[in-house]
Length: 79
Picture 1 (cartoon, rainbow, N blue to C red):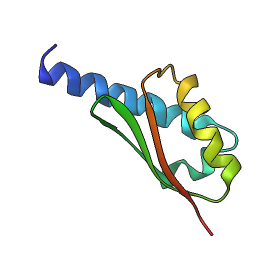
Picture 2: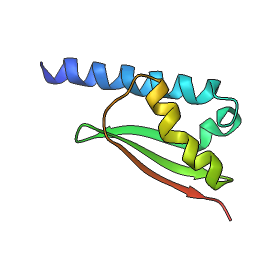
Picture 3: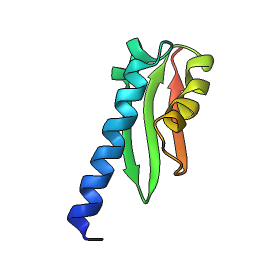
């Protein structure tokens, strides 16, 4: 797979995750606070959310997007 093909695949994955997060009833209104990227073949999420329950919902939501890669959840809970 070429670098261009990998970049295109990664962009599609990130967009699919963003779409699922925006449609999620718990996370949707806070989806803009979450940054999603792919680093070294792992999904990386950063940002902040207002509760631990919302942070805990991130990985299951990403899985519902059909992503089976490792997920590194660096989201902070706002105090």
